[in-house]
Structures are given as structure tokens and as C-alpha cells.
Length: 360
Ligand code: GLY
Image: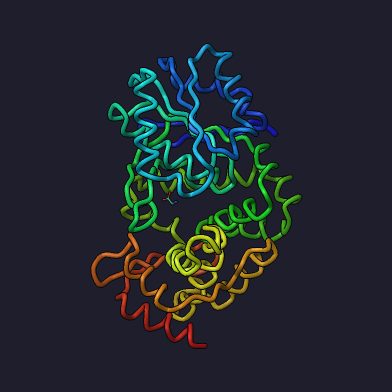
């Protein structure tokens, strides 16, 4: 696969580099993006460390970086305040300076936690994202959102902090279990829904992992290109960036109903996108054929297109959603595949329509 580079303007500007085998040449790219860095603080998890940790560290040491590694247990519970403090203590114990950098090697949990630590230790050090799941490659590693979870909910404390470099090696996706790969595909399909009808058709014609893997470079490039345009236009998530949450409000309801264990984020978003498309039809915004088309592409990938859920969870998700302001909720709807619309409606009206739909 040809190496491809995308430039994000947000923050002080950074490159997303996509290419096979990048894990083994990460040191070279990091030393050119962060020429003053001496120490690199690699944060990874217990799944990724045995697979790619040693290869990454070797590529960093060749460039004469002083490398320290911290492994957190794999899973969402690692996105905690306790782990954040441990990372601060660990970095300061090893003499971190403001020109040094954190390297996040892993999925969204590692990226969010390590990004938060990088944005806050010494009021901000360098940050390199090396995402290893499809979900983190097409979404969380780009755009600068960092977070930890609090007892009141996920991602409730965090910062906007753009990385200095994102390195994406598609080869690492080969070790992902199939459901984890497909959960990432839900976010990939989302980009087709909200932005690019041709990309949606391209995905519809590739209903299995082998076909998708053959074109993974194009898939990663297209998703990151869309995301960088959105982030460049609205880094702080006050307007256009909200379109990236298509399917997410209802998805949150499904995640909540399943106690965050029954359905992965991607699976919940898949069913959430179908329901959001149906809601759009009910509200007269979305063309009637759209839900069926979205359902077909997701079902072909083995993703859920409907998740039964008590109405109280939908009420909670619509009520507490971060996009809400007072009585109003901003819905992310489609006019058609590839044509997104943000619509502010009264929460009571939205819940009335969703309640009627859930009784059918
Ligand atoms: N994951 C949505 C965003 O980055 O805004």
C-alpha cells in the first residue's frame, strides 16, 4: 500500500500518515514531527502491548529516544481518574519535560486516556496517536478529543487537545477479532451516510472483511479526510462537528440499556443510525428509502440494525445528551444518503414521535 498523508489544520497543524508497516518506522516520523523530544512515554494496553509494543519501542530506540512504557488493563474501566493520576506520576517520576511526548498505542480507551494525560501534565506535552483499532483509526485518534469516564457517565471529563502526529498502520487491524473490526465499520458507514453517497455505495459493494481489507487504505483515507474537514471547520464541537454524532444519541440509549456490556459502541451506533433514519422519515426530513439502504449495508456486515430498548433509556439519552440545550435537542438527521441535516426540535416532540415509533 502506498503511504498516504492528510494534513489537519486544527491545533498547530499535524499530519495523519497512513501506511503498511508504519509501526516499524514510527520513530523516524516522530523525530521529524517532534524534533525537540528526548523522552517518549508510550501508553498502551494489555491486549496491544504483547502484539505491537516491542516493535514500536524498537523503532523508537533506533532513533535514540529514551522510551518509557506504561501498560493499562484493556477495557473501558481504564479510562479512569486513577489511571490519569498514575500517568502523571509516572511521567514526572521519569523527568518529563514540555518538549517530550506521549505516544498512545491502542484503541479509543488508550487514545482518550493518554491524550488527556498529555494535555494536562506540565500543562501540555507532545502527543502522538498510533491507533490500533478500526474505530480509533477512523474516529477517536483524529480531532483532539480526550477524556476519562466519571461515575455519572462516559467521557464526562476531558480536553480538546490536538495531537502532533497520527500514524495509522492498517496491518495492525489483522489481529482484531471480527466483531471489533465490524464495530469500527459502523463508524465507517456513518461517514458515507453523512457526507459521501459514493463512499456509501462503495461500502455496500464490499459486504465482508476480506473485500474491505483489500481496500482498507482507501477506506481509512476517505474517513479521515471527511473527519479532518469537519474538525477544521469546527474544532470545538459547537456546530458542524455534531454531524459526527449521527446515530449516537439513540446509540447511547442502547449502550445504556445493555449496561455498556451487551452492545459495543459500534453495534449500538449501527442500530442508532437505522433508528435515526427512520425518525427522519417520520419527521418528513429523510427520503423513505434511506433507512432500508442503511439497514442493508449494516446487516451485510453482521451489525445489529435494531436493538430492543426500554423507552426510559431513550428518554435519558435524549435528555442528558451533550448536544442538548434546555428544552431543545439538536437532531442529526439525513435528508438522503450523504446529505446530513442538523435540526433543533423540542425534546417533548422528539420523544412523542419516538414513543409512537416504539409502540409499532
Ligand atoms: N467522535 C466524534 C468527534 O470526534 O467529534
